[in-house]
Amino acid sequence: MKKLHLTTFGFVSVLAAAAVALAQQGEKSAAPAAPSAPLEEGFASIYDGQTLKGWHVSAKSGHSGTSKHQSGGRWVVENGAITGSQDVPGNGGLVITDEAYGDFEVALEMNNDFGPDSGLFLRSTEDGKAWQAMIDYHSGGNLMGIYGEGLGGNPHVRNYNFKQKVTEIEDKKTGEPPTALPVLPAAWAYFWRAGQWNELRARIEGNPPHITTWINGVKIMEWQEKTVRHPETGGIALQVHGGGDHTKEFVRYRNIRVKKLGAK
Image 1: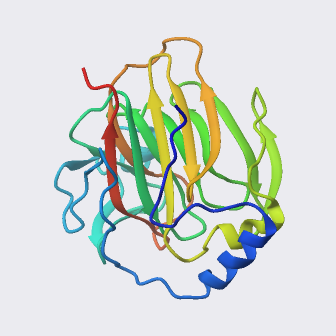
Image 2 (image 1 turned 135 degrees about the vertical axis):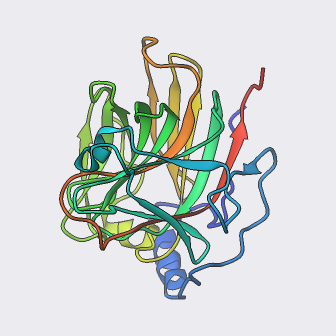
């Protein structure tokens, strides 16, 4: 049976009429630390909004090479959000759940600066090998494409890129099979609330895994791996990418919740 995802932001239609309605709605300022909405059935919160309890920083990935793996970037809680940045120029890292997950769906709200490269890692190892739901929130990047982090860059599937501005995207398909873009580029500025909180969601099932991603309730990408080449369980991780100087640019995540699927 097809499952309907209801989010705190509501279902977003990609038709022009809905885009106009969202434009009007988007004029209202979002509070920086609004209360969390009631949890959806079957979901459990994995972030308490005040501390990093249940999470730990990992400096074992390649993104922490600048510090020679002595630190994994800067991760703190500010205004109710997990906030990450490079701790010194070029040095990023991961914050990862203490608990490992197998088949699950994870949802969170994001309000990152446009510039830093981040990611939502599914079944992550301590050294950052994972199936990544992309949060490449910068020119040339995309949100919720799927990437094999530390897995030879395979897969690398996406259906759009950001242009120079966060409010502009181009329809550009990468990987096989190509996936249609469900949001018209002309409607993106209304669909994606730049500078406000938006919802990202990813589901992973099976091994080889079947991965699906959503933005604000709209399915963006669906992909099926063909071979077993990564463990069937791992952490849920958030990334600050290494390289460049992003010490004064920040990623922010809140209202992080997970639903375990087919628990054994």
